[in-house]
Length: 267
Image (cartoon, rainbow, N blue to C red; front, side, top):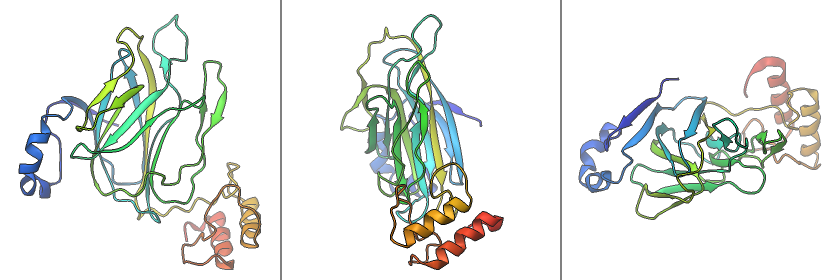
């Protein structure tokens, strides 16, 4: 992965926007972050892991990325941190607090802002497909204890293709005037680190995870699970029973799942 750190008020944008909206963008551009990391265009299925190092308690890192269109029934984009902040120096406690992440569109409008809650220490944002993906499990404290968050299932709505700004820091506040975040931690706080993960699955990359029972395997137990759901049984994972996406929940979904498990790919 090649990351390009820029120091500029300018940012990449589709050619169609350069002239048609330049009058609108010009006054707003002054407020854009001067220093940021360009993650480039991420329009294909991928998981991008970005190392985060905050040099001080009030440090905020910015990223710019192009993301695809995702809808409620096709494709998804997810932004999350798999671990809380850890101390970046020796001789200090390993656990150093919770990340705060905000996502803005190209005009500086805030789309989502997640500050970690409770013991999980996780950031979780999800756009697009409402069929739940397995929960993310992570280390939740300095003792190595694991915890799992709730499933990701498009809670933040749909997303249009475009360039998006992502800010990550420690417990910051977002102002309403576009791109402005205010750190709430003192600069004297020690450096800390975590990983920002961006998972992209565009609509053309069919989501056909056969692990219906979320045990980490795709096998006969998942067929039994789906058969029970189709028969009116409980569905603890909340997965959509319409596995082949034909608008019906029936025997054809079981056959499609069997086909996937046998190595036949997505329906």
